[in-house]
Length: 187
Image (cartoon, rainbow, N blue to C red; front, side, top):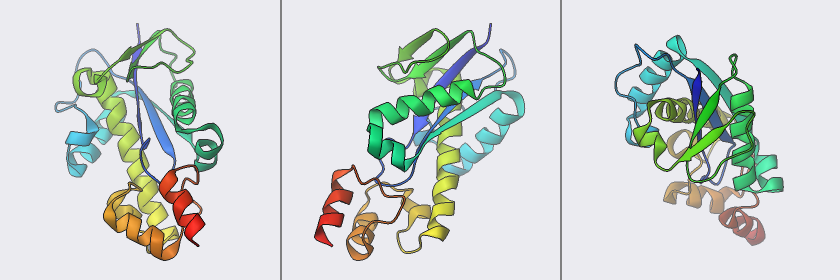
């Protein structure tokens, strides 16, 4: 019985999409060191992501900045999670989802608070989602120079806030988020 873990990356940033991943791992031979992607080093995440992809079934779902601004971040996150599960090459019998709320999924699901830190398949999904989103933000840095997306990945760091004030929002900024709205109003 295939059970997938589901998690997202990018709910809080001021820029970029929200990315979700769904992962099915084999019962044996799982990579060592799986854990919450937020506490792993970037190098460890990249190494683990490659190991997860080598042995697991991986689906990725993305909700765009436009969807975030139209639907809201909560609904967009659930949309990305559903897309991730639907992108799996193997239909799961059930899903374990990080958090306290469940998206509408094509299989039975259970929400697990702090699941990314305690449930290996959710940890794996956390790592995949974070590495995919980080790669997207590194690409965005080249397309939108001056914001430092490769460093802060769109989060509201002091450097990002200063760039937002100096340059104004770019196309990947979430206009529904207050600091971006304020930067627009100030222009």
